[in-house]
Image: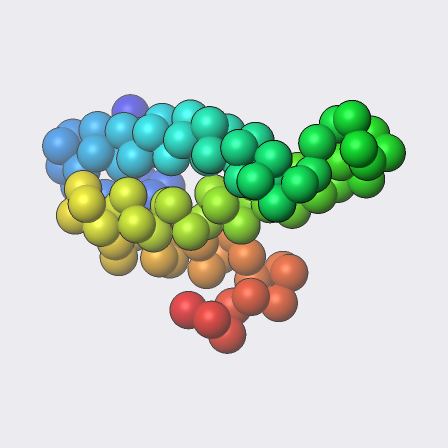
Length: 99
């Protein structure tokens, strides 16, 4: 745990537990939300080529993941950590200016 705390520049075990909890909730919720969202906009495995479906699924789940990451992190009081995390994760794709 100390390596992770040093890597993330955090000092307390409580903050580490909250961060790990946010990651767990966010990852699960992103998967749960994405499939119905695709169905809602009319994209299913049955009406689109499977390669196109998985490309769209990846794009949508990525957008959902980072949106929910900011929302859930605010609920747990870890918004500053996850804002920096999202900025570092999305900067290679040109999204840095949005943070």
